[in-house]
Length: 464
Image (cartoon, rainbow, N blue to C red; front, side, top):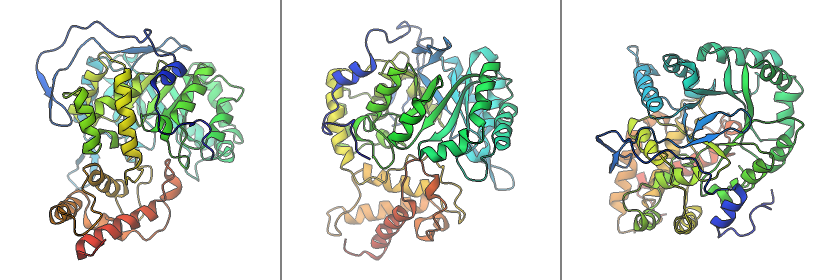
């Protein structure tokens, strides 16, 4: 696909960024006081100071007047624990604690889906939220019929009603057509030809859906087609981060600059996913981190990314999958209140982006849509370990590198610790079941072979 929206790949001009999205003094913040006492530790291990209370930044949905927290809680990766029988299950006590802390500190948007956390997310989220007054939170869930075999009208209606039951609510604040973007035919198969969109529009009219929208991963043709349909979309969920602003991979997505501008023309608020690009923007290469530290020695790479994602005025909320309290606390500090990205910082991020787009990353966001693998492989964990080595600058290019022995040992030992041997890349048989599930359009078997080859070279101490 031709990237008409990217005239100068080497620039991330903030003036254009702000002009397109209308960012300015209208950004809503709370007063700069009211912090709770006690220091906390950031996700990087550094001290981040007090966690503010009563200072959350909010944005207003122009269609319903909802006052939505700029930090949204993504419920894709709830904490897990081992059951007595050895199987994994959601750690409900940990979920409850995270939800309680988030609501206490001003977070009111919770995003889930029937397919998240092996199908457990809606249940766990519903249990945690049921303990709070219904007017204290907005719940978002999805019509996750993007896999074959669940695309009839009856399937869609049952999925919708099951979400209501699992979440223990009698209306859904934000309901999305899930993972739209692969083709217009696929969209029509899932939502138009079977009558599901008409049904959902009826539910919105009846008040059981308060806001109707869609999440986008895919090609510009589909985005334009869906956005320009004869329907008032109340919101749209898109991938936005400082790398994808003008450097989205055209095989997998569309530049966020274009997406945001088109949504703004239609007065459709944007809900943001992947502000950290699957965690990669929280563990940038050392030379990139050094640039950030020159300006803000105390700020983490993640906080830069979250501030960037929250800066556009058209952004309603920025989702973060916060499994650990440290992540939640750091993000609360970033958005309580938001300090928008300025000119100097944007110039730094231009330089960081140039480093990132030339890196040897596997473009996995760890969404786990590819899971479960029929052969038990932990695909996202394999890619995550490989990408961590890329971020740390420890991906070996030559067996004669000065740090070869150390980097070889760290990769192999770390690989075995993070991914059980039977779930590693060398057990991939290339069945291709995972490939159509990936919203980033990654050729997963091919990338698994790349990791396998690299690992085998290290094991055999072969030359590169």
